[in-house]
Length: 157
Image 1: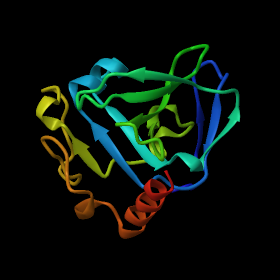
Image 2: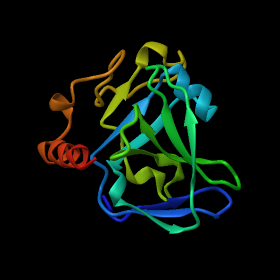
Image 3: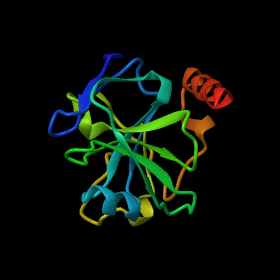
């Protein structure tokens, strides 16, 4: 996978570049993600916020409720309002980049399907990717180097 993935919003006002490969990629089927995206699921590429380089424009941080009750901050284009990435539960050291905003969304593949308890019945999941009714233990799925990157990012803030 290209470790210098680039993306942006629909209108082109905000552009970004990832300075490393994502630590992990989830495909979330929760009803909140369905509502927020207007789709059947969302694919989030998880990366350290410090490794997101905004190359054009500036996003707008929009506080949004979440199922956990801890909320999330969705960074959106201030012009077209496309969601570019989120910070969940007050943790701003890591970001969940909306893979659909990557120039090559196919460059990332989910390592897990989560919240499949609310998956739409017509969505068929490939059997080679682990699926979880709610969530999983990161230690089980995340590569050791990704776990180390996450720990380092959370330790810094």
